[in-house]
Image (cartoon, rainbow, N blue to C red; front, side, top):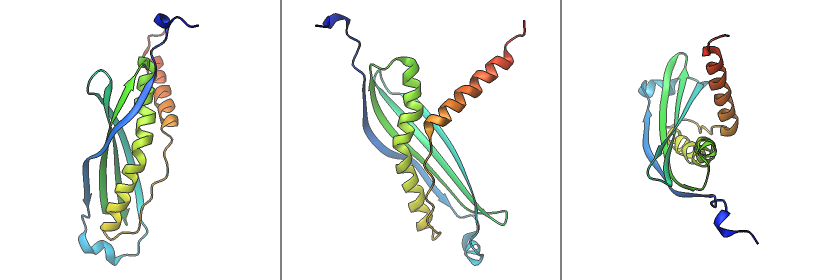
Length: 157
């Protein structure tokens, strides 16, 4: 039998709430955009941020900004800040950073994607279904870039 005093703390992760923190849609050209054949260039910008609410609860906000341009003019801009509150307990600090940067945005992304698609359709544009995002790969890439930057800044011996 395991000694109960030496047990590792049980790891727990639970979604408490998902909500829209901020949402906006803009069509700068107005009706002029609908007089052209629809062949847009679509640019997606993504950002996440985390905020510790208390010892075991974290707010994670995934921001998706989509800009569609048509012949170098902006057809529409849509931005969604999809928030979530997550309960996290017993996860070591190094792992916690990764969970907040990968698992939480992965949970939030489908909600943000649906909100963007809904706004675009309500704006009278064709549906815009964003491709899934691999937040694990983005995290690994960001960590590698951070390590490379630290290595390049380190004094040479």
